Length: 114
Length: 191
Image (cartoon, helix red, strand yellow):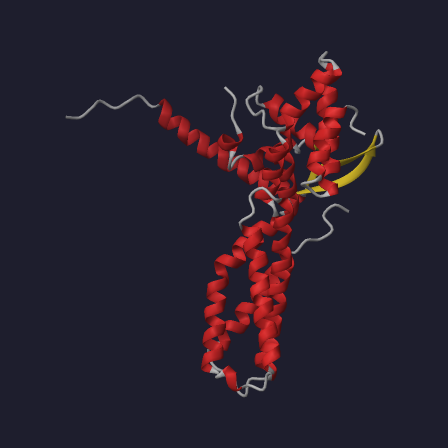
C-alpha cells in the first residue's frame, strides 16, 4: 500500500530530515532514500519534494549549496545542527506516539457491557 | 541540457511558472530520474515519460511551491493580524485628534494610497494557489507595510503634540511587526 502526500502530511519534514542524517544529498537522492527506506510506500511525486526542502532550508533545519555535476547545476542539502536537534526530538516523539497507538490497537477488546 | 525533447518541454513549462534557480534544481532532479529509468532498461522516450510521471505534472509541482511560498505565508499572517494593528492605530489617531496635526493632506492621501496598495499585494499573495509569481507580492506588501509602520511611528513622534495611551500599545506592536517582517523578507537563498 502506497502512502500519498496527504497521508504523509505532518510527517514529511521529519522524514526529509532523517533522509539527510547519513550525509548530504540532492533532491532526487532524498526522494530515493524515502522510497527505498519505506519499501516503496513513500513514493511521492519527486517534484513535490523540492518545496519541502526549501521550506526546511528557510527554517534553518537544513542548508543547501550549489555545485556543478556533468555540466548541470546541482543543489545539495545537509542537516544543520538545528535540524539534527529537531530530528532527534521528533524521532523520540514519534516513537512514543507510535508505541501508544500500537498499545491501543493491539489490546484485546474488552467484554461488552450491557 | 536535459537530454530529451519531452524533458526539455516539461522544463520549459516549469520555467514559465517558477524562478530560474528552482528550475535549475528541478532540471537536475528530472535528469537523474530519467537516467534512473534508462538504467532500468527503458528506451529514451519511455524513460522520459516515466520520469515526468514520477516527477508530477508542472501544475502539481508549481502548486506545491505556491503552498510553501514564504511570501504567501507572510501575507496570510499579516492579513490575519492586520485588523488588530488597525484598531490600535485607529484608536491612537482618534484619541490624539490626528486631524489637527500639522500634516499635509497630500501626505495623508499618499499614506492611505500606499496602505491600500500594500494590503492589495498581501491579498493577492495570500489567495494565490497556482501562481508562484503572485506569492512574491507578499514580500512586496510586507516590505511596504513595514515602511508604513515606520512612517506612523515617525509621524506620532514628530507631529503629535502629546502622547496618548493607545500609542503605548500601537508603537511597540508596530516595532515588533517591523522586526518580524524584516526577518521574514527574502535573503540570498540560492547563493
